[in-house]
Length: 589
Image 1 (cartoon, rainbow, N blue to C red):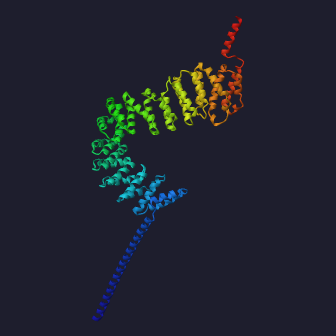
Image 2: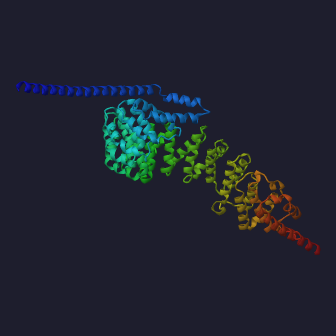
Image 3: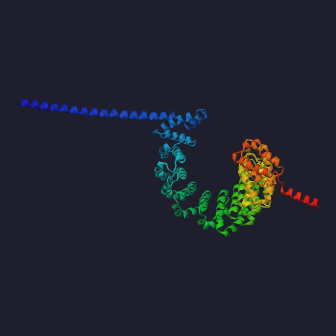
């Protein structure tokens, strides 16, 4: 019995041993499988890195794309479409370098008008990179493409906070540059404290940028101005001149919006004006005083000496013009300054540079309302500007001439303009005609002393080819002859050549609006037919076959005038009746 029991025990032990060995084999198989899987995953990751590396190696750079665009002038659109397809693939790459190059290319294409709003999230990905060159590209792309309604703008708040607090001054500078271009009310509210803290930076580079970016923050989030104002004005005493200049620039822009709030700072600004050696800062200070001086008359008296010294000594045209503009707008009650400003403006108008010439004419326009006599002294110089080839300068000079017209010089001015009309080309010729009409019609013809002379002027203006003022000329002819009885006989005589000239009836571009003047001439002649000389000749002219080329409304007036002139054909003119009666009296005696 014992032998059988031992055999049973042995059998059970043998079975347990076999089971243990089977379990170990299972675990070994599982471990082997895991090892093979890890090896496969490693191989896959290595292959992915290899593919990404290959993609970067074979990726076109920004320079390659630009060369390709220049080389495919005939198929530029097709080339750009192919590049856009490539960029869409490259910008999704996990490799930062590949993504950065793709972002550079789409930013370049965006400057040519192509949309890059679809890759705004990829811009943020590149902006968040730690490498300096990649971050720079991301910030540049964001400045170019982000708008107020860009969805991902809220995602860059923390990124900007981090970079604004960076120990790398250039990274903080990138953040400030980007913020200046993409500032929104939300970003201004969340980041104004971070910008404000940079005013105390040890780097003047960051203090200057932070000062300028604060202005954008104030515009988008005005509530930030009051708590930041004291610290901002403290920077006027900064040891770095560029920071002081930036503060003055910001205060100048704020002063333009509400000058009353900055009037208490006038002594500080005056001190800076006297000590400034920076032309740009001086320009901003002078501009501020131009807005402050109308609010405080005593300030104008203080500014006479420094502005006189600047205008007399500075070689900088930009600073000189800013001083002149300040005089014309806020200090025009100081005669000595005005005289000096007008003398300097003459130099501007006589400059060969058309930009300076234009600025001089515009400044003279500002002085025209308050000092017309001072401007009139340069009338000949202004008239010479009408012969310039620059259309803008011609128009500005013409506006000045129209403003200088008075009852005393009107006839000379009109005669001069009529001479220029003969050699002028469109559209300036049309502006000359309009200027003459406006000068003479102003204030219900208040400047006119001889209406018969004006009727002859209107008759001359009616003959100006391709004029767009035919209707206005005709309306003034009728208006003048209706109002002024003494001008009617002269009007009939002056308008007769218009009605008897068959060339004016031809259908050609030069006679586009002559029909309106002919309508007025026919109407006046018909209404005052008693003053018509040589009526048969006029009747023949009114019956000319080419009259059919005129509009129907003009033909109707021609018919009415014809009947009225024909009705007076058997009558004698008023002067002739007086002569006949005097001859009869002499015969009776």
